[in-house]
Length: 282
Image (cartoon, rainbow, N blue to C red; front, side, top):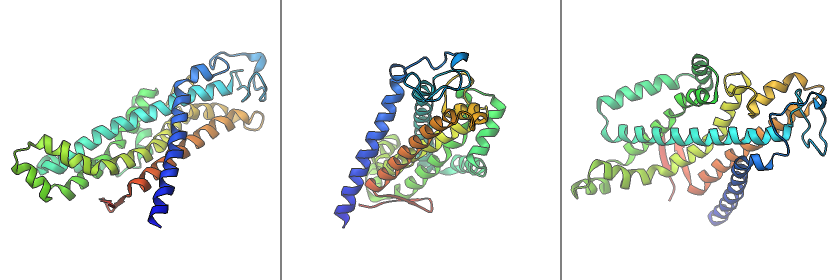
C-alpha cells in the first residue's frame, strides 16, 4: 500500500512539475509566442470576439488579449518565483539563527514576527502597498513584508527540535564551528519542510499580486498582468466576456498547477507540519 502511494506521489510530482516547467517556459518565451504586440491599440478592432487573427479576442482598446495573457504570465510567474525565493532564503536564514543562538535577539525577533502575523497577510500587503504607492516593486515589498515570517517560525521550530541531538553535539566536540554546523547538519534536516512550504506559497503569492493589481496597487497600466487585466475588463463582462475569461482562466490554472505541485512535493517527501513542529517520515 505504501509502495503504491509512493508511486502515485512520484507520478503526480512529475506531471505537475512538467506543467510548472511549461508555464515557466511560456513566460520566458512570451515575446516569441505572442501573435501580436500586446500594447498596440486599435480602436477599429476594439472588443472583437475570438478570431484567427485574435484567438482570444481584443479588449476595449483593440489590444490582443492572447498576447497580453502571455506577457502577463511573464509578469506574474517571474515576480512570484522571485519573491518566494527571496523570502525563502531570508526567512530561513533568520529562523535558523534565532533557533540556534536563542537569547534576547531571538525573543525580540519572534515578538516582532508575532505582531506582523497578527494581521491577515493580504490586508497588511494592501496597507503597505498603499503607503508605498503602485508599481510591481512596491507590490513585491508589500507581499514580502509578511511573506518571510512563516519561514522564520518554521525554520526556528525545526532547529529547536534537533539542535540538541547527539550528532549536533558530536559535531561541536569535533571542533566544527557554528556556521558549519548550521550549514552541514541543521539546514539539510529541515530543508524538505521549508521547500514544501515555499512551493505551496508560489500560488498564494500569484493571487496576492493579482489582488493588488486588481485594486490598482500592483502593476501600472498599460503593463500586462492578469489581475490588472481583469480589473480593466470587469465592466465589459456582459459585452466582451473573453476579456475577463481568459486572464481569469490563466490565473486559476497557474495557481492550481503550483498548488498541486506543492501538495505533490509534500506527499513525496512525507513532510508534515503539526502545531509548529516539523515531522518527516522516514
